[in-house]
Amino acid sequence: MTRISVNVDGIAYQDDVEPRLLLVHYLRDRLGKTGTPIGCDTTNCGACTVLLDGRSVKSCSVLAVQADQCEITTIEGVSSDGTWHPVQRAFHEEHALQCGYCTPGMIMASIDLLKDDPDPSEEAVRDGLEGNLCRCTGYCNIVRAVRRAAQEMRVTAP
Amino acid sequence: MIPASFDYLRPSTLDEALTMLAEAGEDAKVLAGGHSLLPLLRLRLAYPAALVDVGRVAELRGVADRGDHVYIGATTTHDEVVHSPIVKEHCPLVALATATVADPAVRHRGTFGGSLAHADPAGDLPSVAVALDMEFVVHSPTGRRTVPASGFFLDYLESALEPGEILAGVRVPKLGPGWGFHYEKFHRTAQAWATVGVAVAVRRSNGTVEEARVGLTNMGPIPVRASGVEEAVRGAEAGESLREAAGRADEGTDPPADLHAQPDYRRHLARVLTHRALLSAAAHPTG
Ligand SMILES: Cc1cc2nc3c(=O)[nH]c(=O)nc-3n(C[C@H](O)[C@H](O)[C@H](O)COP(=O)(O)OP(=O)(O)OC[C@H]3O[C@@H](n4cnc5c(N)ncnc54)[C@H](O)[C@@H]3O)c2cc1C
Image 1 (cartoon, each protein chain N blue to C red):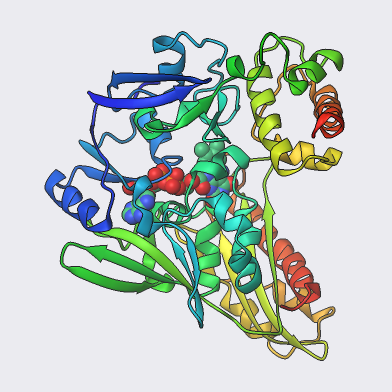
Image 2: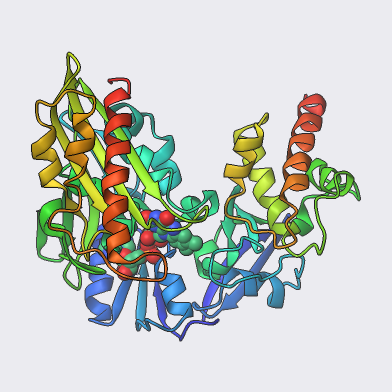
């Protein structure tokens, strides 16, 4: 067992974990944060994307011990005081989901993308989300939602 | 899937890492970004007794301008390489190829040195390493040695690294003014590995190609230089003769057969992609 200290969605945790425990299993099974789903389990689909020290990562391909001393944000930590994150709101408004399975990962990857590029072109959104697969073929609405969120975040940015 | 159990060791200096690796014995492995190793562990295609995580060894990370070459620390992430102003200015071919690796989330974790140490001929960086004659700085408990790219890749997933050795970083020689670059990658879906890739650097003057370096991705068990092309383009005008030269791209190669392509199709791709890469590199603004 190895002791880790992490901050997940604003709360500090200390836990003893087996080195082979994957971050996504730690989040779901130990912390109960089932908002992050497991899709392919082969690092391809991006459903399990979370932010690790602010950058998008596929949590099925990171060991919990590698996240020691890090800050993790999951889909459960992006809204504040019951107010949705602009990206969440835009996904709702633009109907950017059908079954919803890829949505947590799509939203986390989009938040990361918008940090680098607050006004992405359609192509930039598609490139930025190339590691996230939607099998309901919802990409058009997803791209629209990310660009709508970008616009809203630019307007409300201080 | 869940990997088999292993011990986890996390050194904070290179010396400590070398000691831990030596003490952990032959069944220990270095863990960098984990984006090639963890998928193997999950599929239980590998079951090391211990992982030595070099992810927090500060001296292994970062990009430095060292006069006649750029030094890229082994654990510098793909994302850091792509965004490095030093890489962009002095070895843009590295940035161009790295930007095609997988997707943003994978590039946040996967490392420059990990990609090279993994020695996957389908990886995008090994062909760039041979095209640019990079030098690999390798540490062991008994000292340090330098391995040229031409001697680093031995076979499919096999590099010149011995058990107990750690790749500390890579020297990328600066080519100087007058060079143009391009990395042309053919893959069937976004974020997929290259079916074939071609890394090209050309030096031009007055509309003529003076010199070219051409590296091939996934045209055999190790990355290779297309020396026939390099020979044929020397002194050629940057026009129709480039197509002719590119026709020699598959000479001496031994492309694999897999789900994505048969060898004859890969040979065809190598010729077509080399032509495209030469055209783009010849049109690339000089640094
Ligand atoms: C979905 C997906 C898509 C991908 N697509 C591409 C692609 O299109 N093109 C491409 O090039 N790559 C691709 N990759 C691979 C990616 O680039 C990996 O980051 C890279 O192959 C390995 O780097 P790493 O830091 O993750 O190494 P790890 O997985 O940590 O290690 C890989 C191997 O190298 C050894 N090693 C690592 N660092 C060192 C060191 N410093 N010294 C000695 N040995 C070391 C390890 O022991 C291990 O054997 C993809 C990966 C995934 C998961």
